[in-house]
Image 1 (cartoon, one colour):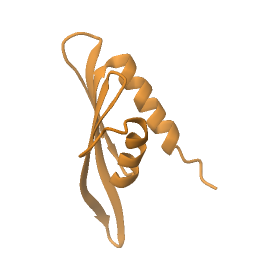
Image 2 (cartoon, helix red, strand yellow):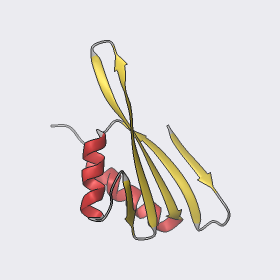
Image 3 (cartoon, rainbow, N blue to C red):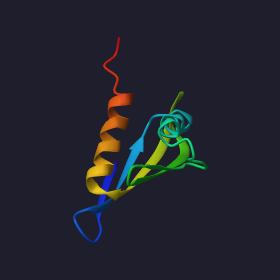
Image 4 (cartoon, rainbow, N blue to C red):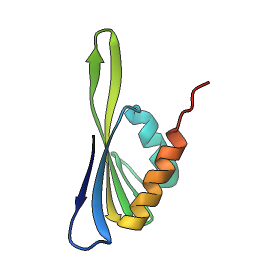
Length: 94
């Protein structure tokens, strides 16, 4: 589920992304962009990113990771980070 919360001006917002990508992979991605990030908290340009690893979702014998990623900051900066994140993890199969 994706949730967008516009707070205050149009320039600042919070976007929450629920991902099925493992938390360790997500953290590794953001750590490459912010080498000083730690404990699941990163900053890329004017966007603050928080990564929270949730319990896996189990569907019978299948277990799917659940990671919540929260983006906060200037709308244009956050959108650029979100686009880069999605592009990096985009899978077309094969």
